[in-house]
Length: 449
Ligand code: NDP
Ligand code: 2IT
Image (cartoon, rainbow, N blue to C red; front, side):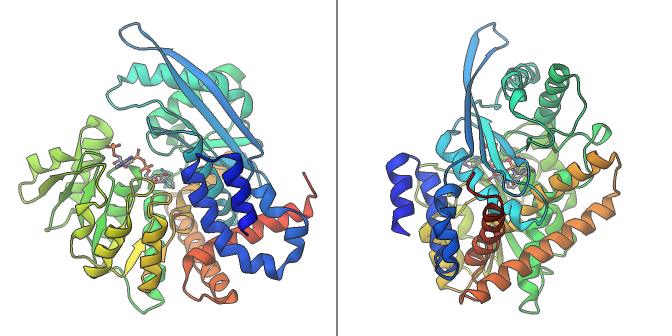
C-alpha cells in the first residue's frame, strides 16, 4: 500500500491533512484489497485519491469601508460514483487545498455510509466571517456564488454548511444562485424552513453523534443516562450535541471556541444552552461571556500552539470533540483515558491526530471516527434533497426517526465490517471498510472513468 501513499506524497507533498486522511483509509482497507484483487486491477485506490475535479477561483468583494478584498474560493468534486457531489462549504482563514481535500475525501466514505445516493465533495474559502457585518457577509456570499453557481445543480453538486457557514450564509448563497439561474431548485441544503429546508437539519449532526455514542454504549448494555460529557466547540454541532445529551439524561460540563473554554460542573442545562445559542448564533460573541451570566462556571484561555488542551483534562465518561481537525492530540487522548473517558464520538471531522487514535484503540475506548459519528448531518441533507424533489415537508418526528434509523444502521454496518475483517469493535476500520466497499463496487460497475 506504500505505493498509494508514495503517489500522494509525490503529487502533493505539502498537503499534510490530506495525507493524514488518506493514510488512515489506506491502512484500514488493505485487507479488503487483498481479498478483492479486482479492486487493485481496476486502480480503485489510485482513482479514489484523485479528485474528479478541483475548482479554484478568485472572490473579489468590497468591505464596508469601500476597500476591495480578494479571497480564494474552492470546490473539490471528489467522487460521484454513488450520487451527485455532496458536502459542506467551510469559511475559515485556515482553509486551503489540503484541508478541503481531506474533508472531501472523508465525505466520500461518510456519504456512502448513510446509504443515501450522494457522492462526495467539499468547498469553501479562506474568508473569515468573524467581525464582519451582515452586509459584508452577504456581499462575500454573493461574490462566491457568482462563480460557484456554474458548477452546481440538484443532480450535479449540492453544497451545505460547515465551519463558518450556517443558516445566514446558506440564505445569501441560495438567493444569489436563484437570481443567476432564475431557478428555484435544491442546490444547497441547510436551507430555511419556509424556503425548502428540512426540519432537524440544524440538529442533525449533533443529534446523530449522540445517537452513535448511545449505540456504542448499548453494545455494553449501557446508555448515556447519567454520564458526564466533555464537548468542545460551541457552534452548530456542539450546540445540538449538548441538547441531545441533556435529553438522554447526560450532563455536559464543557464548551469552547478558538479563544478558550468554559467548565461548568453543574451542567449546561437547557436554559444555559439557550443562552449559548443566543451568544453564538445571534450576538456572535465569545464563549467567555457565559461566565458573566453563570458565575459557577470557570473560563480558561486556550493556547493554540500548545501540544495539549486543558478542556480534555476533566474527569468525565464521554467526549464529543465538535470543533475542528486535530483538536485532540496524543497528550489529550492520554489525559482522556487517564480520567475515565470510555466513549469518544467525533462530531468534528478528523479531530483526533493519528497517535491519539492509537491511544483510544489500544485502550479499548468506544471510539467513533467522524466519518461515522457525524454522518447524521449529511444524512439529513440527503433527506432534505428527497423532500425538495418530492416538494413535500416531513414532520420533525419523521425526520428524527429516519435520522436515528440511519445512525443505527451506520453503527451496525461499521461493527459488521470490523468483525468481517478481523478487528471486531474497531470502528475506524469498520467505517473505512464499509464506506469504501460501497464506493469501490459502484466504481467497478461504471468502468474506468
Ligand atoms: P461552526 O462554525 O458552527 O462552529 C465551529 C466551532 O468550532 C466554533 O465554536 C469555533 O470557534 C470552533 N473552532 C473552529 N475552528 C477552530 C480552531 N481552529 N480551533 C479551535 N476551535 C475552533 O461549525 P460546525 O459546528 O458546523 O462544525 C464543527 C465541526 O463539525 C467541523 O469539524 C465540521 O467539519 C464538522 N461537521 C459539521 C457538520 C455540519 O452539519 N455543520 C456535519 C459534519 C461535521 P470560533 O468561533 O472561535 O472559531
Ligand atoms: O462534514 C459534513 O458532513 C458537513 N459539513 C455536512 C455536509 C452536508 O452536505 O450536509
